[in-house]
Amino acid sequence: MLFNTYIKILIKEVLLVICILFILCPYSYSASDNLKKPEYILFITADGFRPDYVEKYNTPHLKSLIKEGVWVEKSTDIFPTLTTPNMTSLVTGAYPRTTHIAANTQFDSIQQKLVGGPRDNKAVTIAEALKAAGWKTAAVNQFMLENRGVDTYISAGYDNSEKITNVVIDILKKDKARFIGVIYGVTDSIGHKNGPNSPEMKKAVLSVDKEIGKLMEYLKKSGLADKTIICISSDHGMSDFNKKQASAEPADILRKAGYKVATAKTDFQPDTQIILLSYGVRILYFMPNVSEKEKQDIRQLLTQIRGAEVLDRKKLDALGCHDNLSGDLIVSPLPGYVMSGAGEPGGYHGTFDEARTIMIFSGTGVKKGATLKEGRNIDIVPTLLYSVGVKVPSTVDGKPLKGIFK
Ligand SMILES: [Zn+2]
Image (tube, rainbow, N blue to C red; front, side, top):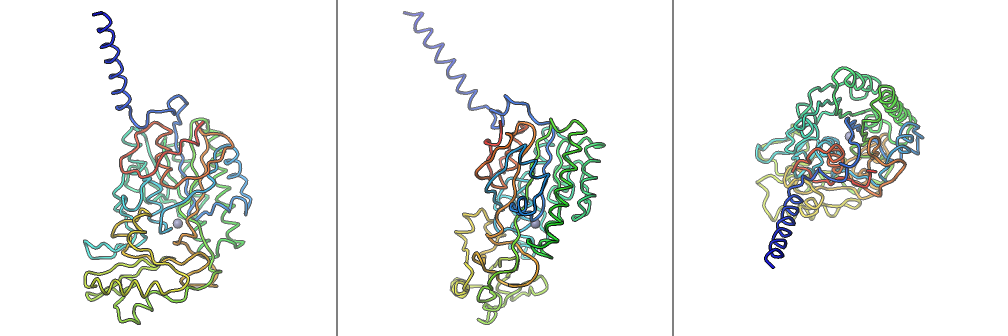
């Protein structure tokens, strides 16, 4: 009898210890531990690369990566679909509300000034997380990683695809970096200049594809291919101006109604009531001298624009936008409309229409020839950290895409 009681107590204690062990188990310690972990991470971003370019322009090297890895069918970025906030979210796995990088230029209400090219990202970068785990890290053109956890940072010329590849190979050879974050920029510049459906864009897409092919060839030749996980991504898509014009320009309507509107740093005066930044969408900030009644009036005026929608604080919060750096309102053209530049040559981004991105995973531990229904750009950092067994920082808003692994 006594012995039975003793056994029962022992079993209880053993179960308790097992429970505690489960609770203490780190997030990164999981199914991926049964598999061979990658020793290298190559995180490539092609600026403004639309996912449909793969088929439209028939990219042989990307197609072969897809065949060898996982294609994410519906991959999306963060709103507004601009470069600086999206490059930040790509390297942190966090929304603008966490990174505090909300636009290419943003109004800082505490300092009461417009900040161009904001870099003060508040989230941990993938390079910082890896470096803390003992990794040697590098970045080429990935400007949101400069001074943010990389041992080596090289600006290789944003549009110079060939040079970018050579620099990456050089870093792999000489610096022995195990993580490299890279941006190929030419697809964005040509997208803006000539548009996504132009012969110039075909050339730009194929040139980036060719360079990615060269990198893959080097990985094979050097024996790194079996030790590397590769992610191909983009920060946003690209639309051409071949759309209908929304019925009015927000700045014109507000000025006509008597409001003092600044659309650039140079316009900003002590009596400015509204700052309105123009990036495919219009990001609107109210100055402290605007009353609640006036805010209602302004919103009412903007909702009258046909072909555009007004996103208020509630909608912006739901999108992960920052609660004041992302603006108080965003006016965004509806699908099929632009707010300015209709019929112009070239392209733009910033709206929901450019939210689709490319996402491919390939290499060590990744399934072969598989597809994943969907993924968000903020899921890339946790996925890559999970694959190498490094703890995911608490600033990450995304989730590891475990479905890509064998
Ligand atoms: Zn971009």
